[in-house]
Amino acid sequence: MTAYLDLIMFAALMAAILSGFPVSFSIAGVAVGFAYLGWMLGIMDVSLLGALSQRAFGLIGNQVLIAIPVFVLMGAILEKSKIAEELLDTMGRSFGQLRGGLGISVVLVGALLAASTGIVGATVVAMGMIALPTMLRAGYNPALSAGIVCTAGTLGQIIPPSTLLIILADVMSNAYQQAQYQQGKFSVEALSVGQFFAAAILPGLLLVTLYLLYILIRGALRPQDMPPADIGLATPDRREVMAAIIPPVLLIFAVLGAILGGIATPTEAASVGAIGALLMAGRKIGINPKLILIGAAALVVLGFMAGLYPVRLQRDDNGALEWMIGVFYALLAIVGLGAVILALRASIRTKIIHDALNSTLTMTAMIFATILAAGFFSLVFIGLGGEERVAHLLENLPGGPNGALLFVMLFVFVLGFFLDFVEISVIVLPLVAPSLIVMGHDPIWLGVLLAINLQTSFLTPPFGFSLFYLRAAAPKEITTGHIYRGVAPFIGLQAIGILLVWALPFLATWLPEVLF
Image 1: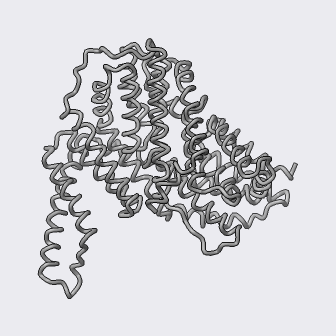
Image 2: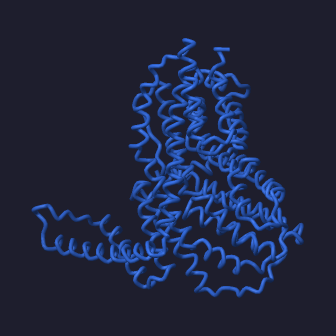
Image 3: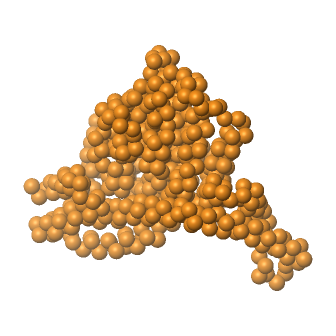
């Protein structure tokens, strides 16, 4: 029995999580119990736990993970200020007259919201409350409607910026460095969040394309499932469409462009995104749009010019030109700061910023508590010999490297029925990823495959988070059975997406190679 204590520990973890007890406490509690048991049985060196404080300090000071709360804040501001609702309403009225048009608009809005917020729960709830009743009134099949809303909402996990990709970047970078040490390389390379963001763009767009093709084909084969919407809503004019779409698109370009262009780190780009979301919220809640536009333009010009021609006023050799440019930069900063203050005051007055900060604090605390507890769990698991068992298992599977990868992908897929993506990312992947990389798999390509797989965990019953979110927000005529049947074809599309990225690795590796 003692020889299999690591496997028993993993089984106990699954049982504790499925019991409904808070996840981070379940993980830490199982770790404490098995650390004590391993020490009592004499099969674990308890001095390993001395590294726990180092792991906690490393987590708190991790420059990559600091981006998570700022990106979450950006998405929360956009959600609380009802910008997502405006986008959904405009796109629905634009495409509603086409067969399957409402489904197309939901997928496109899901992609836009994914690239601007990255928060699955907020997107699914918003679309469940706004788009789903409209689809039902238009005569859409209830199961199909629920499936489209659930699936479009999960795009926030694969289309950057995404908390999943940030966590995966940290996990895969550590695994890549560990693999290099195992190969005898002591001048190791690291991977960046920007590389994973770049790698996920084409696969994310591939999934959007698969969803749209499915809707169009099903609309052609079963027109009764998705009739043209004739719900008495006026088609928006070009100005209305541009006003709804351009601000989120500009925000996406500002955030992702800064990261992929090497201008800013993910944390700095997330700060830009949060300020941009605040300005967009200010425009939405009544601040003069011209003031917001002038302030945003001043900040953009300041960032662009300061990058091209930086000025350091503390230098003694500055001439008149440098001082004139410095004063100009200061004026731009004052104008931009004024717009930010106006938007912040309006957000405080309408309680938008309060709700956004509360959501950010809740989600950030959950993610970081889980990562910290998972660090404790992995230390004990390694101490019980689990890491060697996993490496030995993967090396001896039939099919070599591809057989090992197939096993891991299937294992992660099955775990997705029961566990959250954070738990799988920080508990399971650090154990299997180094061995897969040593076998020759590209770490960035591997990370994208795992990201699509983990995105699927939001759709797989009985514990898929998107299913719970929609169940809470859906109208009464949508049953749990409708939701489960509706997501089934899209889970198949996710599998097709994984196979395409597996067969065509350049989908994940081309853009990072070009940009980095």
